[in-house]
Amino acid sequence: MTTPASRPFIDCDPTPEGHGPIAVWGHRPLALQEVINTLGNLLLAHDVPSMSRYTAGKIFHELSKPAPMFGVGGNALPASDYLGQALGVAIKGGGPLAELAKAINSIAPDLRWYRSRTGPFASINFVRGHAHALMVGPGGMEERDDVHIGATIMAPYGRFPDHRRKHPTVFLALSRAEVRLNDEDWIVRSPGGVFFSDEGQEFAMRCTGNPLLLLWCQRVRSCTRGRL
Image (cartoon, rainbow, N blue to C red; front, side):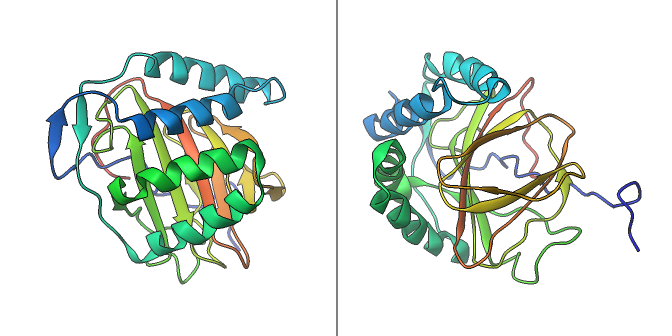
């Protein structure tokens, strides 16, 4: 039996790869700015846990100065087909989360999707059943290496491999998700839930009958170009 102390970990943290097809100089697209604005309002709300709000504050301070380089052109992977379903459920729920879901839906054609490696305790549908996309970061819609804003989608009854976070990360659930930090119990995160995982912390997530959709924000100390 695998014990917590002996549990293997590999590099499957979804750090962006940094390969955009085309990069252009310009100004931050209005649709992307709307995503940043609505996401910032949710992560900086007064009832957000203090560590999440503190980290988000640093991230959105950096984002107040847009980068001059932007990626052009999206792609698709099998799991990205679940994005519309997950966003539709969030939109039906109304409120600020619905506004964020609408904003993400408007930039969906420009998102570039990629996969993590598989790893310990991943579900059998993991490889084809998951995808990540960068809105801000290397190879993202806004090309920069100081902060990342991304999304992870996972097919129903999927489980992400156990891994360690490479950067302090703030998560926002847009769907029901089950999350475990270190060796704590699994916790259900309802849509709109915000939580934090520190650098080096053990992390696992899974979903049941609904697709999982999480947004994540990272403040990066140095540029990281390799996919994990």
